[in-house]
Length: 238
Image (cartoon, rainbow, N blue to C red):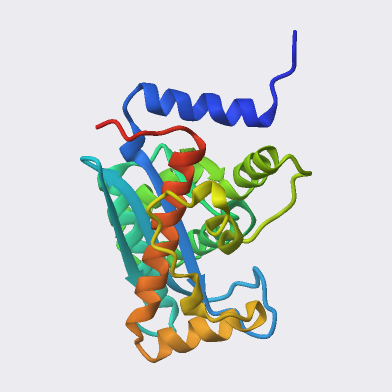
């Protein structure tokens, strides 16, 4: 029996989603965080969460923004994400480097929210009662298929260019000729041109209530979703 490659496995999953007309339950997720001085997965604060998906053939997207730098405010942000998931119930969580960053971070934050709710939240017969939004977020993180577009894109681009696969930034993927005809929003420049300064720029935009942060994040999740559609041959079916 011929071994199934990871690329074939992923394609098979997406083909099932497509054939069952469930593309509206593929959700593009991205987090923007307070990353200063080279921190990485060190329990950094989530500043905003962006989500994009299809509804009736139209791309819907939105951003949940942190109100203040407190745990309670961060839990409220997670609750907003969970509230969305109660409606859509994602089959696939899609992101660029989602498996390397967004997924492990939001999973850690979910546990912290659960621990806080167990200690300080409502109880019944001595047992904690977790809000519906908590369970919706937990369900999405533990049962959905996590699709990291970074890996799909690097192999697809290498095949297109007849080169060896290599890791690429989302900005470089967006600018690749393969996606020239895809109606992307292309807003990566809003976080600055210097990669090392991106974290500080994101934090400054959040701190100053700069609407460019929402614009930047909406574009990221929107563009990631449309790139996935291009790579998997999805001409959206209602």
